[in-house]
Length: 154
Image 1 (tube, one colour):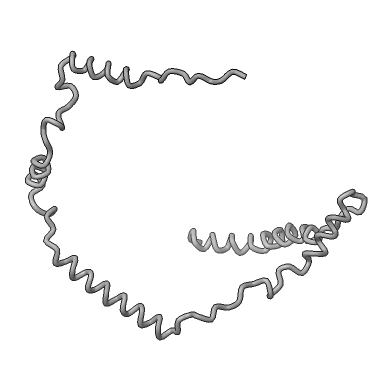
Image 2 (tube, rainbow, N blue to C red):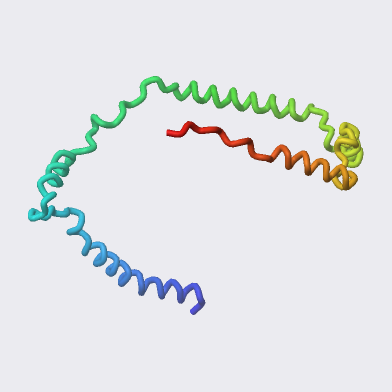
């Protein structure tokens, strides 16, 4: 017997006990789908009142009505074909664009770098220690808390 034949034979032998066990397990829960309210509970009258009031909910009248302004199938088909035509036109327009990113990458990077002012893009480490300390001091002055507000005493 091959491995596949053994698995089929094994599954045939286990299906019947598994189904029997599943039916017994779910059959034991049948009583829990129709619970009864404990009549001795102080909330029993209110619970029963809510259950009785909502026993027939939802009703068909509570569902929204069927929409009446739907397009006809021919109109939907025409819209789909129009979208297909527009998609083809867009694809031809995109194919006609002269993309600049497929050129030499180093030339592209150099053109980007020429757009920036090198003095403004210099790293902070290029400053002198005195400039760094002056900048830190200006930040400390800006970070000082304002004087407290005088509050009237009651």
